[in-house]
Image 1 (spheres, rainbow, N blue to C red):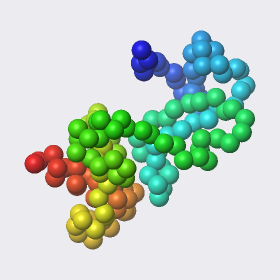
Image 2 (image 1 turned 180 degrees about the horizontal axis):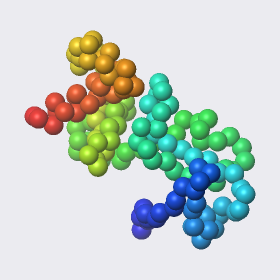
Image 3 (image 1 turned 90 degrees about the vertical axis):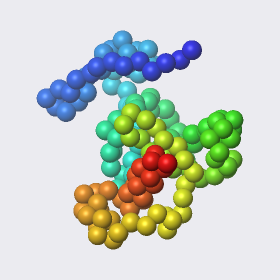
Image 4 (image 1 turned 90 degrees about the horizontal axis):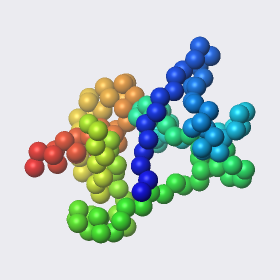
Length: 141
């Protein structure tokens, strides 16, 4: 069985994260070797709003950053949730939960233009506002 293991590193004065050597050795990362960082980002801004990232060895060849990365959800789980197989999905992370739901056409959730403009000034995309409002509404039902 595989599990996530939490550990601490610290940022030094040069802005570098210090990770214990034993952890890097277990991952097959040698001193001075290049690594790749991956994080979840808004499609439009590419901003790391989750404030989390993953680190991987920088293998030769095409990187995952240039490829479409897929995430597969078991068909049984989709059926149990009433989500059609092959549906496009919205994935929202909030309050230590990951919420997966079928994507809605953006016109289905009406949001006042003033609210969208204000959120835009704060760096929050229109799609994210609609998803959050939709998630909140579905949570009330």
